[in-house]
Image 1 (spheres, helix red, strand yellow):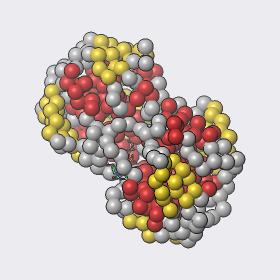
Image 2 (cartoon, rainbow, N blue to C red; image 1 turned 90 degrees about the horizontal axis):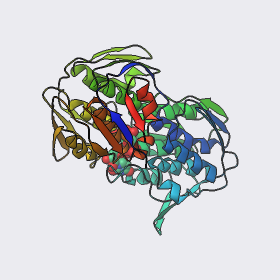
Image 3 (cartoon, protein in one colour; image 1 turned 180 degrees about the vertical axis):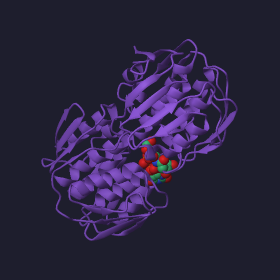
Image 4 (cartoon, rainbow, N blue to C red; image 1 turned 30 degrees about the vertical axis):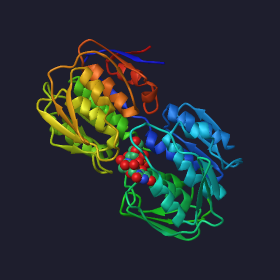
Length: 416
Ligand code: UD1
């Protein structure tokens, strides 16, 4: 299995262009099934999760071509409503195919979705919401069999603003009779992006990003060309890596508003952060400062997907930082690995207490999940000596050849 060999200590400097957001592209690719037409999706990063989604679409009958950063899906030949189990287990985002396939075929058979082992990740909110749209759901031999003779618009209050459940309901409701209102939906930028993609196909959806999303179903859909938003988590990861090495960077193709909470904490840590409409400039101080307590929250709160990378940064800040993970219950696997590198982190329940140290030292460590893996890379870049990060297939799920991106900023990092 591949690993990263990192020689720490280089200051990262330069320009970095963000790619399309994994968490926007994946639900949009699932949604391409709905229209039965051609969708041309631009700005797609080359990630293993996206390759898996493309394979699932192909197994369901879609014609897919992938040229550079453009993926073209012709979903007219779809001939299956069964999501292949082996692929479903590989990626969490396969769960989006539930709403999309119900919209297209009126039925879907699927198993539990895979993804990072960061917590229980139940899908009860998805199922409760889909039942309100008239979907009958049976569990049989470890599979979920969902069918709806008629999807019917409904008022759907979500007990928690789940990103996945909001996206599933939006997709199913596009083919439901009448109006659907999602109350307490997730407000992540990726939700707005899914709305914009579906609207570009001819759907009538309003309100994404607010407290209520309204969908008028059963409108005829047509072919489309769509460019998903840039990856705010890739952006936050690069800024954290640059800050950890006391560097400076101009992040291009960014939407700074999407990164607001992370940028505010970076500013608090002593970095100079300047935002333009489409770019962010960051210059790190010689000595980073600890920041006020962080708690991961649904958007616009601090993203759970940035918790581990920011923790790696705070390992090297003067003072103590407390980070509480309130979205996923098992997302501190990087802590033990960071401590091996000389960090001083203790965990009390869902809170990590990070006492800043002067330096980290190179170590052999292993990634246990995607963002935790990125945190170890950040620590390795800032550490003295050589760090080996094993199990980087986790990192490949969410970053397109991270080593090349970081080398472009002056990092010494090799994939072995
Ligand atoms: C989550 C993140 C999203 C991130 C994605 C990928 C939040 C709110 N969501 O989305 O920003 O991009 O991971 O890492 O930060 N839950 C249930 N039942 C359900 C669905 C969810 O109890 O049916 C719980 C989950 O266990 C979790 C929380 O709700 O504690 C957030 O879940 P959700 O937003 O659905 O997760 P993802 O869609 O995976």
